[in-house]
Length: 328
Image 1 (cartoon, rainbow, N blue to C red):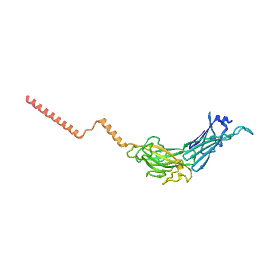
Image 2: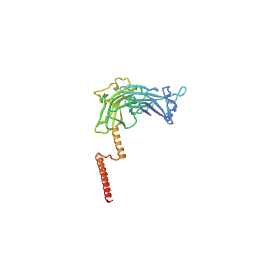
Image 3: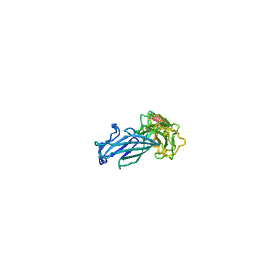
Image 4: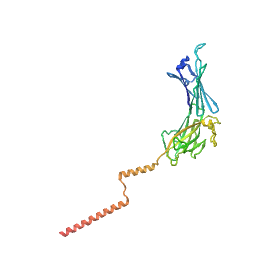
């Protein structure tokens, strides 16, 4: 049983099947002296975790296909003769850039088993806080301000060091599952379309770094999603898509369509205006503590009423004094 990824070829051989052939779990091995290449033996299986580079793995190139192969062998027993089947497990992973075709067969006498599966390269796309790319942004959504510098890194996860990653297209949309109705191109077919887009230097061939300034769609929500198409190529293969750069007129053959990995990241959401929020909170707190503020007309009316009240009291007091003096 075989399972292939962009990092390893995982082969599992049934211990019961080995016993039927006259072998035990410790009779199978890879043609490598590295201790890392020894299998893990479980209760039911012998498990080989074979890297794409190392442990005797052979790498071949055929057109746009990268082929990885290895052989799991059985050790012979006996001094001169043996009555056991001496067979080999041939493991082959055919990887057409982003498509992985897996095969596994046992070749000896009349035993012939073939298994085929399909998979994809594992590519991740992440935001980072600055151009140093030390701190990855894990929160979702990622809250930003308009025209803020955004830093992204795409990473190909593979144990094969002879692969490179290329950013072909990156398109933005206000919708997570719709990149056709309303879109904005940052880069298309390797050609830069946004004036703020910048390709940044990366220390690794399996990484692509770039930046652009944040924006929003008119009359739409503040959320922005990105869908990026990346291409996996053989390193130093100048005829591959990764070394062609900007293609003004794009070819539409089958191999090129298969050579892309789609990655979606987002949403990026605009922050509210902090100053406006603080003003509103300040007004609310003042109203709660001191009540509604008095207008200038209200203050003038109150002062005039107070003056009339005081003058009325003075006149009344003077009139009472005169009456008392007259009575005496």
